[in-house]
Length: 81
Image (cartoon, helix red, strand yellow):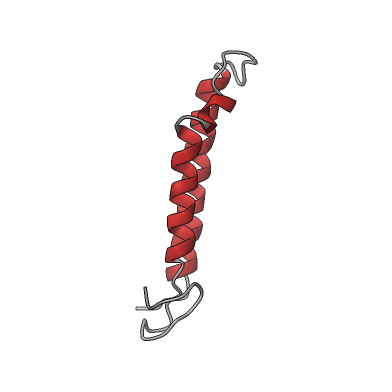
């Protein structure tokens, strides 16, 4: 990978956060599978009326959603057409 994090190069002023994005996706995948999922794999306490294990999954999906939006805005936020 010739681009490093935060560089613009020949991308027309576009920032690149590829390494950070890949590490983030790996981290999100790990919290959804064994062994880290074991931290949230329980029924009680109930959070917002759902078992904790379901809340754990929904919480990390929401975190992923907003972080992917942040990565997109970081890379493409200053572009004008």
